[in-house]
Length: 123
Length: 517
Image (cartoon, rainbow over all chains, first blue to last red):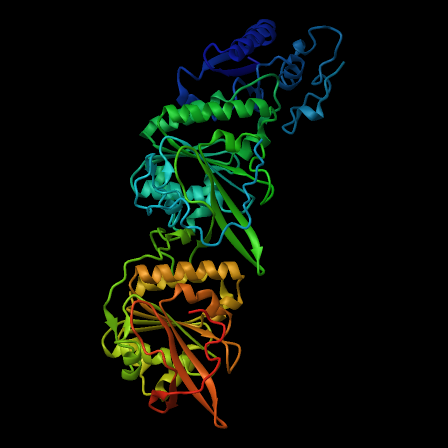
């Protein structure tokens, strides 16, 4: 198993539904059994929100590979999500369109200081 | 949004009357949750409005976090469960910072009566990848409230949200939703937010005053090279409150620190507590000099504030020492607060007149405190005087001199100080001598008289007199509320045994000068 994700959502709010859809289309399907994805509904158990310190929702957490990466938002900007969460893992899917090279390709050494501002989207 | 001025500078100096038909005890329309912050409940007419949101706004360092911590601490001390949500500081940092004041919020958190929700910036969270809301924190707060059935929730400070999240439209929406959620839970909520400047627009993020039913503004301004802190109830939707800015001090440590922390932190000096129509009592207190008591129609009233005005060397301190000594001789406690002379100096003078201050101090009948006026602002002095009264419970008090205190303040602050002081003395039923040094040795008196004359019950004037090529002294009581008194100017002598009052002096012009009686 190369990737482990948690997606925190709140019931079936539009934001939550969109985030779930993006996760299943862009992570679950292409990664297949290389990824373990857990979807957690905070409405069902608000104490999870306290334990995990979830402030904004939806929140996507990449637990593995390290470092832990937390993203907020409904993941509409999936190009950005891709560069942020797939880096550092087993990543043939970084490049599903075939036209781009994944940013993690060359220097995939996981960098804990990785910030979106330091990884401009490829075009 | 609303930048109609929150800044009614200069507010009227003595504006207790306006919305103040009744006194603080008059039951307000909306139920309140007491803050337990001295003076604040008075201006809020009972406390925070229950089940509603109050916003405390102020620049950095104005005391917002301190205020919220104090209100939390007081609540948990009363056994009321509460929730603290931090958006800026980590909850544990905040707790550490207020520990020095004796507020052990950490222990409260351990027992669970205080629930912490730490929403300070998370270093792992990256920029957004689409639209989001704050359901996470709303659910966290909800869960924290339900944990112990909290009725008080403090959120400090909203500015932290605005730096963490850049979709400000969403934030405003979510803050309103958070407020509504807390209202549905029947929680009394206190939020804090930053202001960039002391004056001008109330709201920085366009949500602060609009989201709250009550807005408090904390200010810090420089006056006389000293920070002056005030709090103002800017609005209180649907109910009465006291208008105007009220000075407050931050009491921490020192002699007056209380181990339980109940007297630490913010102390608001609500001047509108002043009641000029306080019921007075007719009991008289002998001054310690028969002739003087005779002039005053049988002594000073037990609850009166008396101004003794005179130039340097005219005998004010002797008058005060006599008054103090007589109290001690009768077994009454006397408090002597000196802002000009040191304790040894006072003791030496007293010894010369045959008063043993040291013995009375040892007997617990006399307390002398000597302090430089410059040591603190007038709010600080007033607080200290109140604390000393509380600790010592005197029957007589001397404040020597108030003109030394006037030197270190602005006219406005000084007047507020006098109002606060005299109303407090009256409430405590203490007979007080306040001295004022008039700048001229002969003739009209100084400015203090003009300021204070309406606030005092009696005025005693000491003056040098030029009579037939000789300098003598004269004493006159130029005002005595509620009593007949000798209105003549009397001769006033000082010798080794103290002071003596002689015959009336004729042909004295201009003794009273500019002082309105």
